[in-house]
Image (cartoon, rainbow, N blue to C red):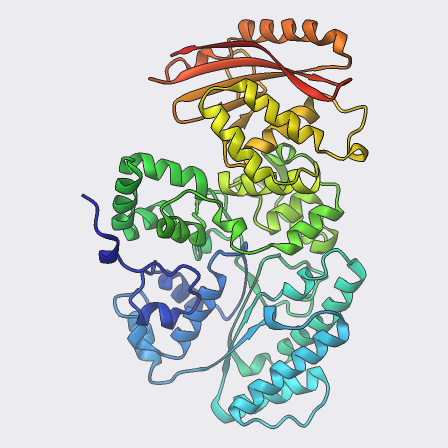
Length: 532
């Protein structure tokens, strides 16, 4: 029997303030041991993580630790350390770079000066200097003289740069101002007890941290791989009651619910070993009791959309299981990065595994792949309204109605602007559009899954139905029948449906889809079905 929802601990959906979370008794996954390790072993750190991955909450927790707010740490790993810290708390300065104006170089410089001036007024510090570097030195040295070493926590260091991502010249101007800020911070190192900087993108050797070379980058280190995000163990331990409650409401077994959650929200890895759930997606899932794409829908990632619009990004399938050098993000600034580097830094690709000095990248989960597929449909294929179209496709597939599915596909195909349809489009292009429509709508679909004798083009997995599709391209309408026979023979000889025969109670459908290059539409042939 599931618990009543009112008896469950409140979920901190969107809550980034550690004090508010603890004071209100919300559910908290204890990450303070990792933070304690940081504080004890070093003093200057940098951490990059995708958006909505707990970076701001991490800084808020560190702030509470250094301020000695022991009442917030009852039964947490850092409780004893914070109690001792309460006798000699540190002054903590938190700078949120996402709040800065960054329309241009002058606006950013003025915004930084205003941020420093506000902090100075709050603590009664006089700033004789008028320059950015001078004001920051006056602030830090004044606070140090008044109360000793400071703790500096900086959130979203790269937000002003990301806002200028499609204008390399402007991005570099923005970077120049930020470089002044961080170079000055380095010059005041003697005033600082601890520095922790977070952002989405990794910095390069020639970037804004070129002078701040005392930072230890823990972004891809094994020791701190789980400093944000939830491991499988943390999920099952901390959310046990929520798992049972949600499984009961959705009429799943506990095991089935966990398997689906893993497919949707797990898979992020920053060391090639530890797998992590996106915390925002997990919290949102339990709060709503429905599988949705929370990570993308939680806010418009405009810098990602703008970058994709202005770059020749390939079909999302081409970035699966790609091999890169372990330092591949350090060779260029993010606005000049190639697609694999950009997708990795923005959280769309993650580390599948490490091999010596190489990394193998892949999409972490369905939520992320579906997000990219949806953007690809809109920005590359120019398909509008794909979500509602995808819902109709999903309903047709559930009924095993491939005729209706193909009809809906052709509707999307007809809506693609003429200028974006080239005469040299072949099988891959039609197949890719079909796959993007499925994934952009949240339908489980696999591209070329391996079997003992070959690879079918697309395999769709529904609750009680598996659909195996083979695509062929006919340059002219006269060749459609021959392509149809070729596809039928391939399905039979390669036994594409055989590997699914063990799926108890599941219907298997196989079909050949022929893309008519002359008439620009898909035709359905050789529909076969049966029960396995």
